[in-house]
Image 1 (cartoon, helix red, strand yellow):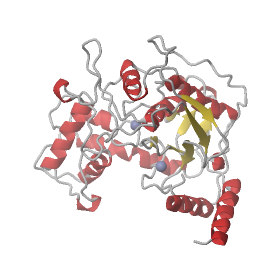
Image 2 (cartoon, rainbow, N blue to C red; image 1 turned 90 degrees about the vertical axis):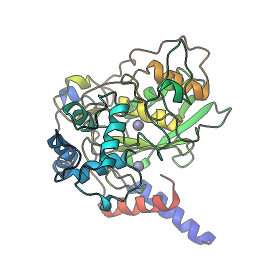
Image 3 (tube, helix red, strand yellow; image 1 turned 135 degrees about the vertical axis):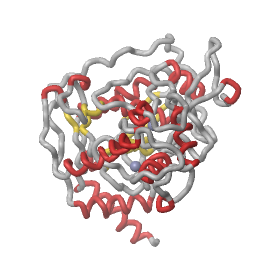
Image 4 (cartoon, rainbow, N blue to C red; image 1 turned 120 degrees about the vertical axis):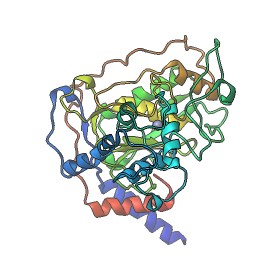
Length: 378
Ligand SMILES: [Zn+2]
Ligand SMILES: [Zn+2]
């Protein structure tokens, strides 16, 4: 590519950024605001509840065939429990591979390890969750035994359950500040940005790392954006609930959220009238853990546990989260051993309007993500 082509490309991208608005369903106070379904939302809702069909597999057992069981195999493959088989190869047969996937899943989620699709297992499977896999290349597992806890740093005779990515990637030794920026096409309000700032602050509280917002999306260490469906990185979002967000290991910096979720920016998410309400800060705290190098934990109280129910808030770092991040980056000298139990209340009236946007033409958005996919800039 010659210089004039590069200039043209840069112009095309900056022109697109200035003109693209990606819809994100962000609600300043879900308790008092019940939105009408946005365009396309009804379909997304139906898709998200496709996981609910798995509830019909209760009592299924090895050796028999069940219609739709291949979808459950795809689910397990996506999250690392069935390695590498192309989805087209999956049958509806309850085979050995499925049984061992179920057992590994049950172990990770502290369930009775039976290999049977019991009610408790299925109820866990259908919960909304992070899009990152629980097992990566078959080399990590959320559940550690004392003798195999290679990444653990036991303290006070306890065993940590946090995990790291294969190869233990982290931001370079000596990193003090990481910058973050928001995808310009999202045009997020101050109150939404404040939620992310609060989420970063929870990790800064326990480490020496600090985080600073910058306007330069492409120059930032961490790039945050709300996207819909297939957005160019091979990890398409699936509409309301299902997968909520995903983030890449250090030092990639990409942090993507599903624009189709009903994101709650402030207010008491637990009292939301909307069954699909998802707490933005809870998901942000979790994904920042990935951006810094943490994998999923089998400790249910940990923010790095892979699932979170709708209408639930979980933002306080658990002991397991703190041990994991301090293993990578050391402790904040000012950290006194206990994390904040609640964030300062943000004023919902400050910029408190619904920031659901009118979406761009699909073609512009698709073009933009195509360009990003090719230049790995997202
Ligand atoms: Zn995750
Ligand atoms: Zn993505």
